[in-house]
Image (cartoon, helix red, strand yellow):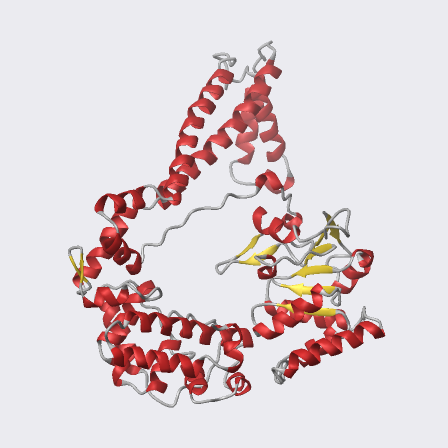
Length: 520
């Protein structure tokens, strides 16, 4: 791994100039906007393709546009130009067809520098001669933090093409404001994968429906998350006594005069304190003069003749052990705080479902039987159906309502308002919250409603983009999530042919054109 620096913050052009003999490169940045900005910045300085390669790019773009004339649209015309220069970017905001085109150009070795977010390194096998990190800090939803070892190596591991590169090269663009991002990343320090178990209403209903009491107990007590947490706690509790015993053994070399004025270790600490008090900024502080005189008086005491360096070395080792012991105690406390009683969570959600009429004991009632086949916001979706909101609304209104299920809008998202009221859904959600349903069990937003309504009524994808500031990939995700939810509702409807037919017709109307690209 190498750092790339030119003054405090090298430009991407300077980075590429430094590594131009080791292309193609995947250049990782940690925001969509940053990938586009860097690509445009590099495009003002570099053009990697010769005339023949440019003709091939033109042909591949033309073929991609034959089935989708609006592939680039007004927002991606700069990307079209960059691709003709052997430069591209890739992130979740691109439409699936556009991402596919970028990936095929990269596989064909017609993109020499691809600016991408970390999602490009997950589940896609696109190696490079080099990988470049624009930064080793990322926003995790709460704060900026350094990359974890596993995050770094997941991306860095793309460097080195089998059969082409004897070694893979990894470069980090260093910003001197954040020296900690130099990393010290170690493969032997890669964090383990942690087990997670979510006790959702569907989890409880599925266990009650398909498992015996003993099978439920084993599921809750013997899952990976519990096992990992318990194992780490046991290992810490074994290590702590060993460290404490080692510290006690080291302390046995100290004599009874330790900490007295005749002890050389104590005298060294006094001299260090005296030097600090003699500095100009501390010399005139209140009490400083008295303390200096006190220290000088203590140092007049005759020093004990002993092999104090052995004590000094023992003290250093003890200090390191105490730091380790302190960290282990903190980690043990974290494990205990974060340890989850899955049995208690299961009973809590079970109790909620009983209060709301989904189950009676272990028996699933009509609401429970419906929610058994819903895998996202199951209480909210079930109540939308059983309250009559879905069947009493027009199909276009239903399309708008379901688009907001499990949708959490970003801070700056803007979408036009739908031409009808969604107040009944707002009132239902408020009712659920007031009756003890946790907020994470009834996530809904009106933000994407107008997009789904317009798409249902036949609007083009370009028209949808004109109604909002969302990127193509985000609009696509809204529609695909709703189509998947409609499949769940159709299956959950059972003998309710009216609801099943409505879900089927909505899905047919939504699963078209650009949205149907990855559909089945």
